[in-house]
Amino acid sequence: MKIDILAIGAHPDDVELAASGTLIKHKKAGYKTGIVDLTQGELGTRGSAALRLQEATNAAEMMKLDCRENLKLKDGFFEVEEAQLLKVVEAIRKYQPNVVFANAIQDRHPDHGRGSELVSRACFLSGLVRIDTNQEPWRPNSVYHYIQDRNINPDFVVDISEHWDQKMKSILAYSSQFYNPESDEPNSPISSKEFIQFLESRAREFGRMIGAEFGEGFTTERPVGVNDIFSLK
Image (cartoon, helix red, strand yellow):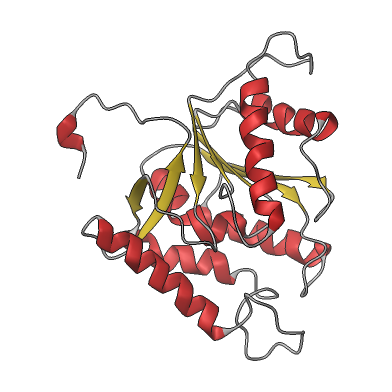
């Protein structure tokens, strides 16, 4: 399946937290969108791999994704090495995205920075004709990194004001992970009511940078080309 934007996250819910508004916006504009989760998030404090898979499926339906799959790399222990690079290469060649979203380049959770590097390298390797995966070579036009827990200055911000409510629904599809006053599972850094408030504050901060109510920030690996200066805000 050929899609336009492929968002890749170390854990189920990474993309929802940081880039789902952008995916929703572009899906509504007619683009094909998808997510690849590197791991099942099996080391998470709350929930289980099976439950998070179901939550990821529910979130995908809310975002109207064209595809979603899980590569089942080992949560907490995947590395930037040949076998795991090739798994990501296979996913990139399978979906042939023009744009890839990857984890933040550095973050509180070490899997995020490592996932960022893994995906960035795989996007390059995917275009090399001598890497044989029984697929056609494919290299995305652009790789952008969404911003997660750490405060990173964005290179560009996407206005998601009209899609904020749907973004929050996709996040709260992970009822095992985020604020749920009825849950009796252990507390975690992301399960408090204050974390949800942080997400809103971060989105409002990004939005304010571009004169919008809510935004999602991204960093780039190279300068962004512009054909029409008036298309910039």
